[in-house]
Amino acid sequence: MPEADERKEKNFFPEITQKNRAFFLKGCNNFDWGTKNRLSKIFNPATEKTVMLAIDHGYFQGPTTGLERIDVTIVPLLQYSDTLMLTRGILRSIIPPTYPNGIVVRASGGPTVLKELSNEQIAMDIEDAIRLNAAAVAVQVFIGGEYETQSVHNMTKLVDMGQRYGIGVLGVTAVGKELVRDAKYMRLACRVCAELGATYVKTYYVEPDFDTVTASCPVPIVIAGGKKIPEPDALKMAYNAIQQGASGVDMGRNIFQAENPVAMIQAVRMVVHKNVKPQEAYEYYRGKIAQKNKG
Image (cartoon, rainbow, N blue to C red):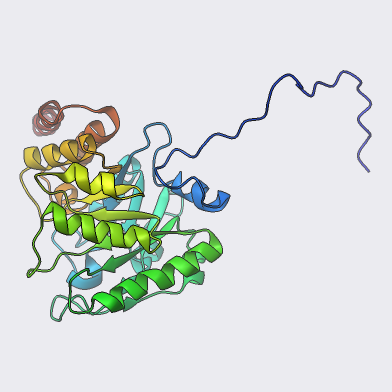
C-alpha cells in the first residue's frame, strides 16, 4: 500500500478560477477530447496551421512520378511534414513507426485512372484505422459527379464510425473534368461536407473570392496542391490561400516532383507557419539548390 500523504501544507489555489481553454481549431471545440488530441497531431497548435504531405496518389494512379520508390524519395521528407496523408498499404510497408506526427489514411477507393473515378466505395474498416493509430481518415466526395450521392454516403458512414472512436474525417472535394473550378462550386462542395459532419475539408484554391469559401465553411479548410506547377506559383498559391483563411496545405506533387523536394517542403513551411512572402520563400528554395549543386 502507498504511504498516506501526511503533509499539511496543501494549496488548492481557491483564489484562482478553473478555466478550460477553447480548442484552437475553427468549429472543433465541441468534439471529444480524443478527436481534438488527434487533430493536434495534424495541425500545429502553435500556428494553428498544417503542412500535410500527400502521397496517396498510388491508390488510383499507381507509381506516380516521384512516388516510384517512397522509401527513397519520401522518407527523407517526413521530418518536415506536420501530417502524412497516405494509404494503409504504404503506411505499413514503408513508413517508419517512429514517425511522431499525425497520420491521415485514405479510406475510399475502388476505380483507377482507367475507369470513372467518382464510383468510389469505402475501402477500409474503422478498426484498421484504429490499429494504425490514424489521426483521421480521408474520403473523396464528388459533389456534382455521377456518383455524388454514393460518395456523400461514403463520407457520412465514415463520420458515424469516426465519431464512435474519436477519429476525424477529412472530406476531400473532388473536381471532375465537367465541373467548373470556381468559388461558387467550392463553397457548395465544402459546405456540404461540413454540414454532413466532416471534421475538416480539403479543396482547391480558386481565384477570385477564395476567402468566401473559407468564410462560409464552418470547419478548417486545407488546400490541395493539385498538378505540378512551377515552384514560385505553388508557393504563391499556398501563401494566398493562407492569407484568405485556409488552415494549411495538403501538397504532394508540388513537393515530391520539385527539383529539390526537401528544399521545397521547407519553403512551403516558411509560407504556412511563418507567414513568409512567397518570393522570399522561393529565394530560400533557390539558395538550397545552389548550395546543393556547389557541394
